[in-house]
Length: 413
Image (tube, rainbow, N blue to C red):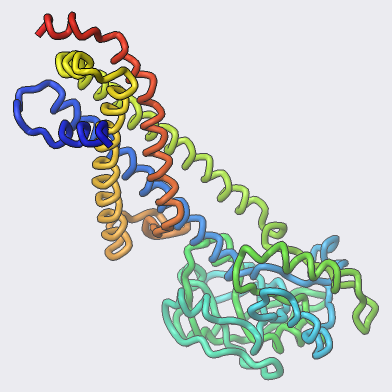
């Protein structure tokens, strides 16, 4: 306690403003504060960006899809049966939020001025429309019925601009098989996720219409989407499906199989995983900056207080006690830097979250503003790790005190 008390008095000492150590202490504090703020902000941005992109991909494809086994080796989805018996089994999947069958059919949208090749996705009453409601630009999203053909179409804002369509516009769709099938649709809602790979590819309509175009029976679908309550339960749910559903047959003799969102879009999730490397580079660099500024500051403080160290040794203090005094002193500097850095990061994150000051090109980054989030667990780890690493880095420089002899240091003064 004595060493802590002496270190606190030294830290609070405000006399002799001409000391060289004062600007050194300020620089060390600023180095820690900027380093911590940078680490917190970069972690906040990367975590939020990963969540944003992951949630958008899951919004389009769900966590897991149950498909016909032959669909894996075919250019198009083969039909598979989903009836009450199948849904009863699927509802037992751990962590399942909803199970929704869907039908997919490639086609073409054509107006007087342009045309686009797209994929029609038919969905019904079991489908969760909250994702598209959260990204709705115009119109209203009313759940489609399973057995009613509405000829309503939900399209992206980018497609609406390419085809010069607006809410309520009529557009013809063409489907190519042995013969050409045509359908007339009305735009009922326009959404925008900025995930251009999906926005420019998918349009949504009722499942009944797509079933009829494909020539499926009422209980035949291209597959079923399974949305989970939490992404962390993906492996648990997939293991259950593999053990209980995969390789079983439907009433037509077709085999079920499953694919997780990680297997469907490996390139996207590999890219998101690479962002963790960027965070580690920033964390290491910022910790190094904070550590070097603290080491420099400690050396200046020790050299400037040579006489104080000599007097304390003359009064009976040993090298270990003196090192503890200056390590405590450095800890106070680091703690003050941490507090300032956390406050700075909190203010900047709050401003960005509320007013989205920093914007991005959505065509490149898939979001129109820098996303931020607060993960208290990561913030706690960063603060504790920075404190410990800085203190550990100061242990070796503190041994300089052992080379200071009382007689020489007092005579030098």
